[in-house]
Image (cartoon, rainbow, N blue to C red; front, side, top):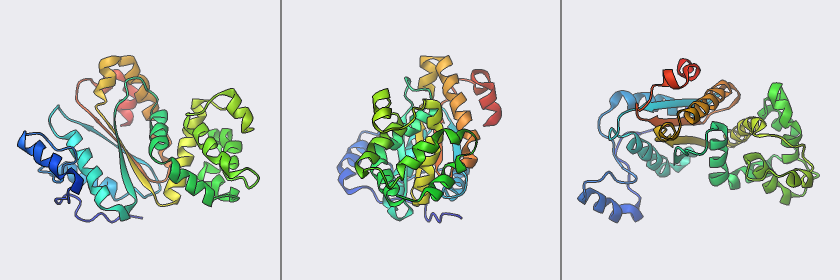
Length: 276
């Protein structure tokens, strides 16, 4: 399956309520918050378009964009954000954030984004799957290998016997917002750690793609983590590599990471460098 993305790099229609801000940005020589046109960089545009056209495919994807300060990395991501706002029929959204120097687990970074931006949609989709244990099993890699650890949790999300009011709490348990022993006991769910939540991330993303909703997780300024601690960046890149290994278990979506060449990937995390 290939998503049809028309006129991706043509001028976009600015958001009406942002027009005054756009005018002031241009008057002061600033790049607008949501730029509505992109100049040059044909090779990068071509590569990104080919990746986006497969965002509804059978495998998650990633792009790691490295460029010096002022070369337009953030500009490009913000442009994509505007494009998909102007093309709502594609059911694709850009979830943008600067790299969090205090969070160095890529799985938890993405789960946090889902919690902030898609919780209502996830709740709606799981409600529609109520009683469909066979489908949820398929979306959770048939509970094979490490996915066996989330079997009870996955089935609880679609159980007919549970009050519908518990669903939101179950979702927050999966994202990590709720994590106390008391919550697990209240919901009668066997406790799990952040390690098992990587499988929950895959389940959530598969449920979203099953509902034809796709997300571009845009993480900007990765160098900020390096500036805080090279060890933290290495830990983040290790979980990034672990996520790459799970891409064949996740249908669609895109992880788009931007950084400056402030560090050498080959030195900070050789295994990640060899993989990417």
